[in-house]
Amino acid sequence: MNKQFLYTPLLFLINACSISPATEISVAQHAKSTPAKQQKHHHKKSTDGVISVDIVNQNGQLHLLTGKLHHDKKTLWYQSSKDGGNSWSTENKVLNDDNLAIKMTRGNDAQIAVQANNIVINWTKYEPKNRFKAGAMQTARSTDAGESWHYTNTPPDWEKGPHGYIDMAADEQAIHTVWLDSRLGSTGINATQGLHYAKSTDGGLSWQANKTLDEMTCSCCWNTIKTDFTGNPYVLYRDKQPSDFSIGVIKQQQWQRLNHVGAFNWQFDGCPHIGAGLDFQNTTGHKRIHSIVGTGHQDHLGVHYLYSDNAGKNWSKAKRLGTESAIHADIAAHDDGRVIAVWDMMTADGMVIYSAESKDQGNNWSTAKQISKANTRATHPRIVKTKTGFFALWTENNGQQLLLATLLM
Image 1 (cartoon, rainbow, N blue to C red):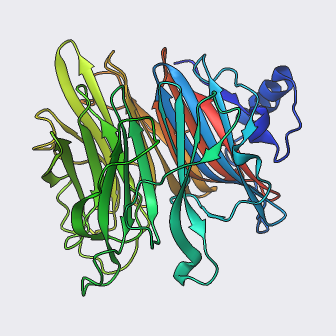
Image 2: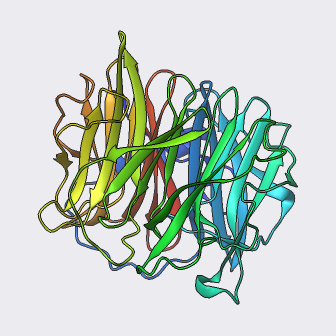
């Protein structure tokens, strides 16, 4: 397996200063060779840096959206890669705004979707007078490869907000968006909101009437939406009573809830802030859905891998990846049979990122391996497939600023 650490200009520094590719790689290679066991560093709290991340692969091209904080000012930045993450276009500041009123953090990141020449991003507006300082969703759109941006119509038709824990997906026919809001009022159960969906068939210019997919879900776990082999959007979300992950699909504009992904029967009244990963694989005519989910059930702590061979109706026995301390995870699958899972978990060296790989569609897995550097606090990994492999990324706190680390796999 060919692995290479990369720190591209927008990732390595908060400002737009660039460094040569040779310098980037040599810095990363040195970091990779650092012994795993070293004296622990006591990190001071870092505030500046990359605080939001989303990435999608659309027709073989990677599209990256990062949110940055610098001297209490927040900005969004867009870049793309046509070679699987080896090199990146010049970063462009979204809306050319040096101080967006945006509420974003890892686990509640600004989101991006790409359809043809249309790039659409969504985020939650920062409203200081609101509870949790969260406001209504805002949307920006670009039709010139991210060179210029403008505000556009938002997916929710309930404009009051707040809207949060957004996710997006796109295919040749439509852009799909899901999010949480409380338009239906109190459910009488602690830490709940409703899960809602909107669709655009004109590249994000307008959005169809919203559909409520589930009236009572967890109020603070991020959702995952992805389209299958024929363009049907699947939604993976944390349910309530129990707080296990549920999955459903929208076919012919009708929502069908399918099943729990991992029936742990976790009863939890609070907000765990734990999302999940989902991907589709078609290997020699064998269609399989792969998922990785987290749970806080005392008998099943950690993150677990499961697969479905009947379009999400039933799921395999859960296989735990990592230790009980594993929290945030993601997964990606290639049609050549490879599947890679990534997750963060606590070790003697602090919070680090691990990965494991299956070369036979998830039937057997390699031993877990640490992929983040020593002596940094690494969290919230993401992974997407590329033309020839996989591209993983996560955020790190090195004690001075928050950085985005990337890894070709």
